[in-house]
Length: 281
Ligand code: NAP
Image (cartoon, rainbow, N blue to C red; front, side, top):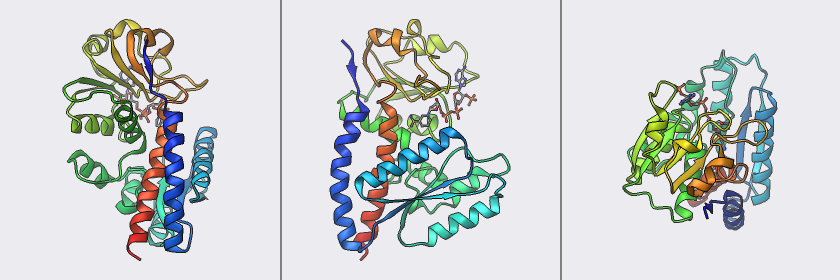
């Protein structure tokens, strides 16, 4: 029977440890460290994610601040907001909720976040360092994926990992992290030819396509490890889990797999940032 890689349970255990660490930081600093989330687009999905992150902060004793900006905000206005948060001592983490409206240069804004406050790992410098195997904050979903695989003892070295999707926040960084763990990595995208054939040689499949139930059971080999990062309407992932689980040796459920680990990685990196600030005191 396939092993369920349960992100909800793991995240819950880590939260208990983080709560303890936050208490220590608050004692040293004399104030609650802040995770600031900037929300420009008021779409229901973003609002839900932001609320979930705020609740998670509160559970472990961090202060969550939501900065809501008008949908007509310009790049310069957003950059000014980021600069002000960069300069504010109590703010240990800055998160710019993706996506932003079209008129905004999202990359310029991500790159304006101070790397030592970039707890969501979106900055180009953070990505470059991570790819080099240097210490850096890592994009939260990819970091959550690696942490869950390691926690459950999934062997990575020498395995063929196929990542379906190449976005800057998910596909590319998760591929780099798997490479750092000595996987042989193939990255697939919308122009990939013969995707099912590529997937049939995979020991590990990471689905980050953004298409419900996209990856099919007959594209997989027996014993594959399935990581479903997809989160589509109706709590459906990017892998047709209902039909694929029986072929797998381990899988992340949707919901309760990668999602909770994403928020947990954000919390973990915010606590690390707060601890660095407290150590300077
Ligand atoms: P994205 O920016 O839309 O990227 C999707 C990727 O899939 C692109 O690289 C695209 O290729 C590729 N793709 C699209 N159609 C394809 C096809 N037919 N065959 C092969 N590849 C194809 O999405 P994202 O932001 O990375 O998110 C991906 C999924 O993860 C979504 O379901 C999202 O909701 C979920 N997600 C979950 C979490 C979480 O916390 N659980 C966090 C973030 C995202 P091209 O580059 O060629 O266009």
